[in-house]
Image 1: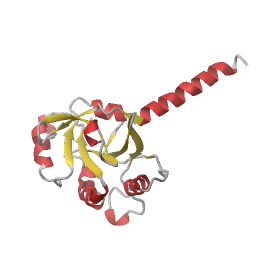
Image 2: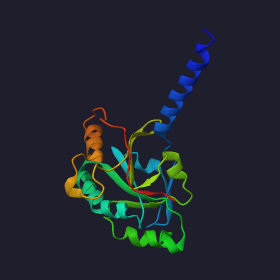
Image 3: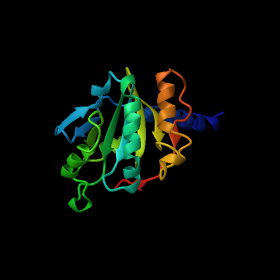
Image 4: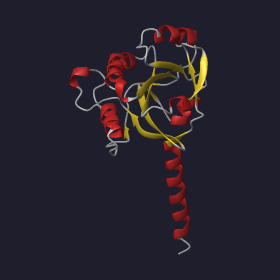
Length: 194
């Protein structure tokens, strides 16, 4: 009996860790490059879901998804879903990922898609994001934001015409119809965040 006790305690701690990792604090801070203001996640409480797309100005995979993300944002615009870009890359001027570069990039996106900088990688680390593009879909709850999906946008990073599964669409359709999300994680393909 005593041999099983450490295993049971370990299993409980692992389950608690997994559960706590799926909740995101409403106090998580994001820096809006267009307004030069920091906001807290609680500003999105009135939305049915928040779709965070981690992106990069220079990553070829992120560039391939820019139009697809815009189309998804327009598709769900009247269903109270907020799409945001988050750039967590370093601010090395030679890489063209500085705040000034992000401001210019933000002007090329749809007005209803906010563009945020993750200046100290706190958002990326909190959400355990490694790639560009990588998606996090959050839904508000009284205790914080529930992470319902993380990973790839769809199953064809290089060719939109070859997409057979759009994971963001599948997840949002389930969330909006109060059904269980069919998939909580799909490995993303893209550029490693530096």
